[in-house]
Amino acid sequence: MIKTSEPKVIWNSKCLLGEGTLWVKEHNSIYFVDIKKKKIFILNIKNQKKKIIKVNKEIGFLAHIKKNIFILGLKGELRIQNLKTNKKIKSILIEEDLKLNRINDGKTDPLGNLWFGTMDNLERNLNNGSLYKLDKNLLLTKVDKNYMITNGPAFINPYNFYHTDSRKKVIYKIKIGKNNKLIEKKIFKKFSKNDGSPDGMTLDNRNNLWVCHYGGASISVFNKNSKLIHKIKFPAKNITNCCFGGSNNKDLFVSSALKGMSANDIKNFNKSGSFFIVNTNVLGKNLKSLKLSQPIDS
Image 1 (spheres, rainbow, N blue to C red):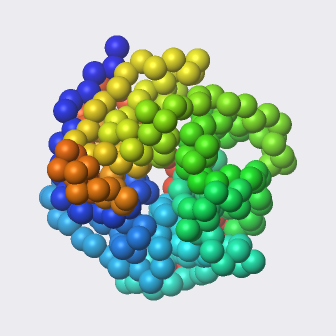
Image 2: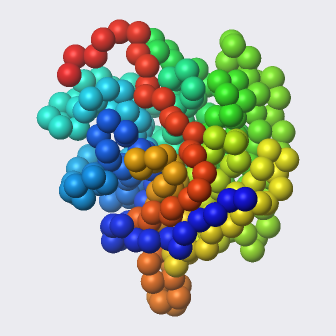
């Protein structure tokens, strides 16, 4: 049986659109972003030191490569950057023909490839979003398309994963081949209006799926048969992203957002925009660092 503590605020970050949670074990640190304020937040869990880095574009996520080098999912660009020296090492332009799109969520798979999605930045009802894979040779492949708001993915193994279209309120279960071709895409879970929208998600080591609810003030946990087995309520309306980490990989780190909230919403959900920790009794599934075939000049 899953057991979780009450959510605790560990950073009153006042995020307009908090996202992109990432635990980096070698740094003892949790990373997250505010997409709209163009900020990266870093909290060292061991010594409680906090750091904020400003970037020049909206940022959906970051993934670790090695030491202080990360890949940033920015509006129209993947950028490899040293976050200690601020040195920009490499830039890969994304969807140059879709100027109103931006990168949203992204994660590494068990082989160290990077997967990320795009969306219409004005959040119009357009199927302009796609799902991409960046491999160790920095080769970019479009794997799937016709998304409104992409979120996830969460990998069961290198060829089976969950991916979300938040606007359509659907989580898909996807199977791909070794050639990156889609073999199967089926609906894993469809949500009602009262649930809010499925947003970021992560897996525990039993392959239970932990799903954030934007507008739903909660995280739901589903087993592999899409049965709800646990729920965590939050004093924040828009729960956006989560990942496991901490010294034993049993702590759940959770971001939230103030975006679109009324004064009454903020009164009722007064911790909205904060960053949370939830203690659990389950092990999280570890994310790999991005593996590249060529050495990176730091």
